[in-house]
Length: 331
Length: 94
Image (cartoon, each protein chain N blue to C red):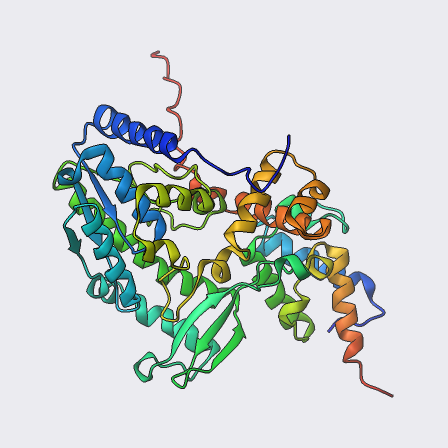
């Protein structure tokens, strides 16, 4: 096929109509639900999903819920309110800090960080995040997580993580996404609405979601869209400019963290096109010529995309169910 | 502690660690020493952390982040070669 930098261009009006019909058919006709609940984070994905949901259900049958905790960037709520106002939805605020404290999320996470950095104390202003190496294309380093601690004076230190600390930090942090899911389902079930998921293709296929957390929804209307395509729809739907310009963040750890440093290791403009090329069997040399990269850089990206998809397959699996046994003949 | 002259020991230790801790196998490591861990899906990001921790603890070397590459970690043979190079670098001078 002919591969170019325009390979991901959508007809946003046609795609919007297609997604709106998808939401209406599945939520109303299949699920027999009257409306939708969307968790809005101030980010681009939930903004697009809210806009699509309002077209699918009218604003009176859409509930927008903001779910910050004490680590959330205050700008997230401001942008979420601006978004809700733009689309005529009155947002609800559910601060999940107390729920997370009840789950011991913060103590468990910070205890694991202290095993790596004993001086870590969030009461004194320390913040932390886990990150991947930034040199995927240049050096082909593997996905090897480390922790970055931001000290009260603003200086940063990056330290290697052991497997036990990594698991405990991630498991504690995942309580955030699972708490949000619980709250969204409360709002949905109390109204006989459906939870409208906000995962894009990058998150769904690469495994950048929490199982039964932000991955827990009744429908995923944009999980087929590359991140850069979500931005195309955002422009078409009139998502507020502040959200369109905002760097995608995780808004999960106490230290500010963008999605590229946490997981994707590439800018979306590069990742999405290379991934499209991989899916359409574009040879690395051809992709390299279009993208202004070397062939080995393209191969490193191809390998990383393939590995992430394969190693996160369990996130997308439904729980296996054992088929019933053959009936025993009566004797 | 394995010595540089005992080549089999380093590969054996690596194979045993991966079989037990990453493959959950009771039948040993079923791949050749030059088989790619990444291509066969033997390790994921957690597996990389576990391999690094194993190498540091077992062979008493320090692995820098920039050294965690497929060239050093993507097969039994490559990992054993990487371990040998680290051990040689800390070998006491006569």
